[in-house]
Image (cartoon, rainbow, N blue to C red):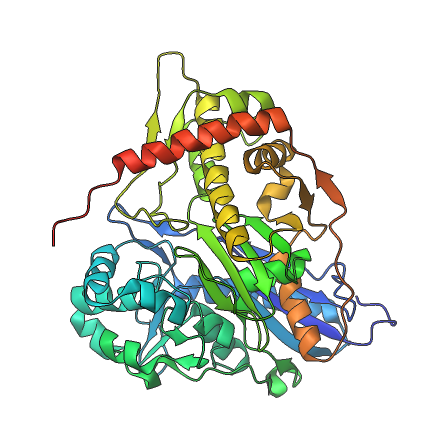
Length: 477
């Protein structure tokens, strides 16, 4: 039950790839004790590259969590609601706004041939700075092309194409607009004009009206939810930065959960956008520059499950820097920095003496090496990283944090917020209400070991060389 000193409550919802969370926050962006709720679920992966979520399951999780969190508010009125949600995913609705497709997540790779075809018809290097997105399977242009090619009858039945967050907010609060932040991660949004890119939509065979209204305006939820003000959900990449304290230039956020990403918030978008990275909207005055990898916590869980390892499997720091294996961590179709869509997971160097623990360490390091590549690209386009702040599930592993610092060759600060995206959603709402938020601090420092960092650098170079060797040559034109 909130204390009497609390003047307003904000309800935050975080729609993640593997769980949905809700909680109440006060005007200082502090979580209200006893208000948190969580429901876990799993992406369904298929042998042909599919990666789907059931929309009905997601809505049930949202309603369940919301019910518990609202009860915790007691008689204290919830003043506003905001949300954070995974970017890029696509859902088709019929004329009555009911789902008629699964949620095709960012990890769904079945649109790879369609993305490749788009790249032959459009200049990806021109589309990239215009939309902030690559012409790849993760984004809507390729997903829509795939949906139209593989199931034209169902494609014709779709009246609205939406992000899952827009649909859930419509079901829960009657507010189904799409925020500029969510729209900017679809690949159909024009960053400079801040609207749907009509030319690209037409090329992809989708009408702008089918994508809905883009709006960051606040709307009342109605009597059903005590007339709380509702802010349209924004991308989890943006909220993760806000909630971890990496909310201004020079502060780089590293979030490692199911997937992983590095991002830096910019006050404007005048800096160069390195090819392979993204630029998405945070709010009306800020964007976020960064890159994401598809294999992180999901790959770690695969190793624990398939190699029959316990959750407490140690990751010795020194041995991680000296292992002989080289790994390409592409169990799920990979993204930044170079989008190697034609490659799959690879382990080189296996012998009779190789252990399950060594495979786990090598796959863990291989993910961190790709994050180090993204950091170098970000720093090449900005003034550099003053601090690197870490959030996400990796916070629970001291071993993994030390190896991450060594693999990146940088000291890291550990976010004090256990749920950065959830907290960031609350901070976004509070800022919209005109509440000034004190800068968040990440006081704990993880120091890197210079000698181990040099060994990791050499291993990273070997990993890059392996990827280059296995990358197929381009087809002759």
